[in-house]
Length: 341
Image 1 (cartoon, rainbow, N blue to C red):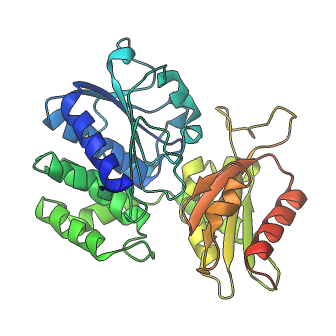
Image 2: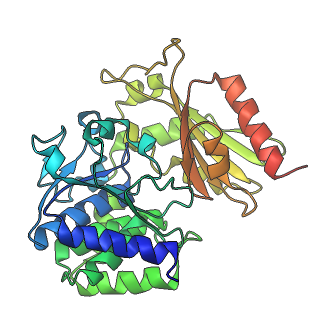
């Protein structure tokens, strides 16, 4: 009897072959794997002769500067007039709540393909190809392209490579597998200039990002003998250095690397369209909390889910309106449940 993974893979492949119109979407605040998978899927569908558009909600702009070189032709920020004729393709999205704006695309009976590698994916699609062993969603898209007999172009390969290197931490995270390296080799053969992509993604850093990093590192606090390392960034910090929200990328890696840390957390104010603190209905500030595990015994996705978020075993996040003392208490308590003293 075929496994659920095999069944889901074949169901997704059948839908990609049979449908003629698609709309491709990923999670809110898209990262490298989200955007790389989105662009690569769009290019693959176009190569198959399909009518496909990519959806990115207006509040997501500007996209993170390091990914703006990716081709974004076919991008829409609203539901197309022929939405009911299109198959929805969700990429790198553990549950539909990870992109509230995408609710505008969902309708009763909408054929929905759910392609993802998060182990806590809720299988919300009409067809689900969820491979928790894959290093990134881009790896799954690469696999699908091969089964669809699509010859990878340089643009496809670059988009997939961005997803691969960002979600494996440049092949340093535990999720990195032999298959991930085989994928990288094939993408390089398809035309990826490794050094050029590295420069685009990891160099050319705006000075405001360095200033924001300095502010975050100046506010590091450690709890429980250093097992929990936390830093915070306020809306005022972003305003003072004229930084975009995406400039926080990489800050948490400095926290995770501190000796003795079992879990790192970066807490930052969410910003509204005017750059002011975003607020919950009760007037409290909304905060984005990013979590990283440095101890294999810690499952940060379980901690994130307790506050309505999600993610991977070693990398997850959630949005909350908890005040700072209550948030720290929550993080300490949840970590202690997994790592008793």
